[in-house]
Every structure is written in C-alpha cells, then in structure tokens.
Length: 629
Image (cartoon, rainbow, N blue to C red):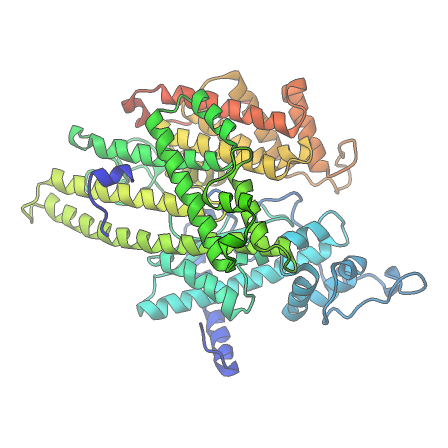
C-alpha cells in the first residue's frame, strides 16, 4: 500500500465510409495548421521542451536519439541515379514494382529505386514497411541503417512516419475537443532531441485532457489508420500524458527551479513544498514514494544478486527495499497477466517453467528478460514471432498505462477542488484554517505524484520520477540551470543507473556498442550525482566519459570528408566509444559486463552519500556545480 494512503484514503473511431474519412482527413489538416500556429506563439525555449527522458524535438523534423547524424531530405535527382547504376542484366534480378508486396532483400537490392518511388507517396511507403519489414521499425532499422544507399530508404520512412504522426495527432485533437465541446483538452505534443536515422518520437501531450488523449491517439493509430498494431512497434512513436513537466520559475526566492503542480499561496512553485512540522509526514511520504519508484526500475533491469548488491552499496533502508520490491512485483504480474489475456493462450498450455515466470521473475536473469521469455512463449509458432512478441509486450503495457491514466485524471480533478478550497481559506472566506487546507492540498499532491510514477512504469521508456524528468529535460536538454533537492538528484541518479544497465544488457554484443548506447545515461547519472553534492573521482571520470560519448562522439559524422574514422571494423561511433572507455578506465573495463559493474558501482557510491544526508538536507535545493571535465 502507498505510504500516502496512511494519510488519507484515496478518492476513489472516426466514420468508416469514404466520405467521412475524407472529411476527417480535411479536418485533421486544419488541426495540424492550428497546432503549428499555437506552437509558433509559444516561448522559443519552451517550444523545444519535453517532459520525459526520451523527449525529442517537436515539429516536422522531430527525431530521437540514434547512431548517425541526420540527413536532409534529398530531391528526386539526388535520390535516384541512372538506371544502369542498379543493373538488371545478367546475374541480377529485375527491379521490383514497389507498389506491390516486396521482400526486404528486394528493397536492399534496389534501394535508390525504392526511395524514388517512396518520395511523397504514402501508399508505397506503407507497402514497403508492411511487406518488407512486417510493419516493424526495429526490422527496418536493422535492414537499412549502416549502408549509405539503403539509408535513403530509411530517410523516406522517417518522412512517412512524421506525416503519419502529424495526421494522427490532429485527429486526436479534434476528437478530444469534440468530447469536451471546447478547446484546450489537447493543445500540443512536444518532442525534443537529436535527429538521426535510428531516432524515435516521444510525444509528450499538453492540455487539460492528456490522460484521455493517450488512449484516443493509440486507438486512432491502430484502427483508423488501419495498422492494427501499436505505434511504438510500427514507428517507434510513444505517447505520454502530462507528468512532472510544467516549466520553470524563480518564484519563492530559491533560484530557478522546476514548477510543480499545485501552485498556491505560500508555494508559488507548486509541489509538496510545506516546511511546517505538522506536514513533515506528508513531505516524508512523498520522498519515500518517489525513491521507491526509482528503485523499482533498478529491480527491473538487474538480477536478484545485482539488485541486492545495489541495495547494500547504496545503504538503502529496509523499508524502501520492501516498498520497491513489492511495487516491482505488482508491476511485473500486471504485465504478464495482461499479456496472457491479450494472447488468449491458456496458462495451463505453457511449459511449467514459463508458467512460473507468469507469477515471479527468474532469479538468474533480469525481470525484463523474464517478461520477454513469457511473451515469446505466448506467440511461439506464429508468423513474424519477433514482431508479435514486441507487439504483445507493448500493447499489454499500453493498455495498463491507459487504465492508470484514468486514475491520474480523477486525482487531478480532486486536487483542483482542494486548491480552490485552499484559495478561499487563504482569503478567510471559509471556516477552514489555512494550515488544514495546505495539508489537504499536499496529501492530494502526494497521491497524484505517486500515481503518475506508477503509470509511467508502464509507459514505454519513460522516466518515473519528478527528479529524473526535470533533471534530464529542464536541466540538460533545455539547458536551464535549475536547482533540485538532493533527494531529487538521488532519484535521477537511480533512474539513470537503471537505464544505463538496460541499454548495456540490450546492446551488449561489444564494449563499443554497450558504451555508445548507454552513453547519455552515464552522463546523466554522473551529472545528477554532482548536482546532489557527491564528490568522488569515479563520478568525475564517469561524467567525462558520458560527456565524450553522448555530446561529442554521437554528434560526429564520420562520413564527412576530413573527419578521421576510428581504426577497426564496425560502426565508427561504437569504435570511438570503446576507445573512450579504454582511455578512462584502462584494463578495469574491457567488456560490457565490466561496464555494467562500473555503472552499478558509481550508482551505489553516489546513493550511499545521498542516503547519509539528514532529512532537512535532502529537501534543500542545491545549485548545479560548475561543469568539470
């Protein structure tokens, strides 16, 4: 049960015919125009903001993180060379008609011809994506990225993806507004980040009804757009409701800080901000809730042995261990049971080992690997089982996320009532004492923040806590010198350690691959530790390594003339990342396993120092230190 529960009990597709479809698409086009007008009127800094760790730059060029620098859309003459450049003579098959079903081999054999036919033609783009890559963005990336010619096909898929995203978002806006009979329910979808061929789009919705909009977006994409799949599988597009991102303020005289929900008299920046002794239990509950969710993420990406080692190294109190363990197990079981339900496969038909994994993860591998094992068993024997596994896992998590968002919306509504009463109390217009009204607001805020974090655990690749979200987005991506508390810094340390481990395990074929994929999380982990006041040589070395990989190597285009390519065979970004690891850690880190051990060591060391702070020190804003190499 939530710690906040001890304080107060929780309160508890468009038209199918062709004419309607044409009208809907026309209206959606108007919606896109309105979105762009709205965005052009916003603050230029805030236009680039986004509320989660995986947020990307908004707009038609919206992209995510990836291996290679962005390439501009080519003109037709640049895309296609002469017919004799792709010979169809002896020894080679004739080029296919890309308006008809094709294989991945045919696309990669005639990439320039495919790219030519795809340009400004959604029907051809869709045909290639569905027939050659089984509508899987993962398959498309693996087949196309790495060769300059096949990457031209990927470029056209990126443009196709953006058009699809814009259309679905516009239809979502119209549907939300028609339900509300007023504007404002959905105003924008911010996205920020790097532009590359392996990018994703993380759309962070803004407005008063974003909780409803997530489900509407997912339904329109699957049914109205007739994909029958999740947008995360088809295009690597993930959609998130409003979470902890509300801009920044210097109100309150404590320097620039992230705005929290619940701005009110005495707490201009919002959030659980009370400093009275009477409300210390509420503030303490909020700190516990947030840290427990960050730890739950660590549990998901560590083996039982690794999990217990981190708890010991970080000096995590037993009560937090139990909270995080219980919350993670509840999450795990919710996902596995939803997968079983959606697959319609009887549990009794599964292998005994898999049946056990439905209830509890294996002690020998990470819970994430256990989930993947269950999903693979549920789609075994089906065509394109790899895509089916991803679809089953993502659709299960998305349906649960949508359910959690209905609870978030209800608590937000109750919070609005508490804030209105607080305002009346502060003006002496009701018999309630201001202190009582303040406590009521803070209890509702704690409940809301707790439920947002719980929901984000089911959202694909999202940060879970206030500290991690605002550190990554406001502090690093937007570049504002925000002040965070040591407790918030600790949550950012913990979450980024978990995400670094996730990437290392997922991309652990070589040291270079593991380091390159986890580089930005290494940087964020160390930056958050420094912000929280941790001073240690290992933290500084990790910071320098993460900075080199995520801010320098990742942004280098090794295909440009004059740019020196690292020695060796393979992806130059990965080769350079491996060299950077060796330069910083020498023989101590020579493989992905040792890199993971180093990450856990840094995270444990940082959290042991943060855990030793007194309660008042945990809640005191800390100024970001001067950047150090």
